[in-house]
Amino acid sequence: MPQIVVLPHATLCPEGAVIEAPAGKSICDALLENDIEIEHACEKSCACTTCHVVVREGFASLNELEEKEEDLLDRAWGLEATSRLSCQAVLADQDVVVEIPKYTINHASENH
Image (tube, rainbow, N blue to C red; front, side, top):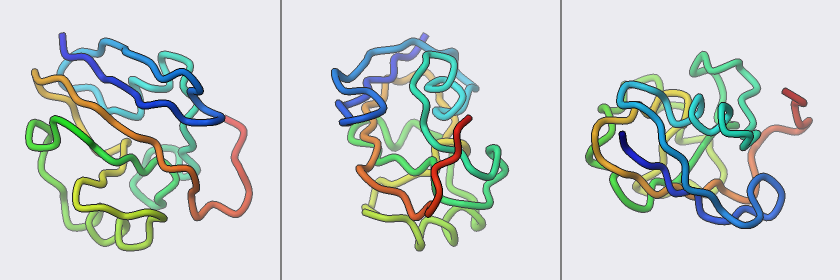
């Protein structure tokens, strides 16, 4: 089962985390199931960028970006070449390292 290494985030995961999730699960779902409350204002429907993550390792192992995700990522705060929407990034058999950006473009934090 692949591991997701979450780099420290000041409010969501101050000490970082290492979690396991089965292949086929989205990064967003895996984080939420492990009490890392990443924002997901659109309820994981690929309609916002609040669940944006930067994949530091293992980017190539994830499913391919679809056009809708690519278009939305253009609006994400702190966009990098290895940025993904965690609700759309599906794990394969390889470990990944992700960083949750400090900010989102969400003006009002959703309390999920």
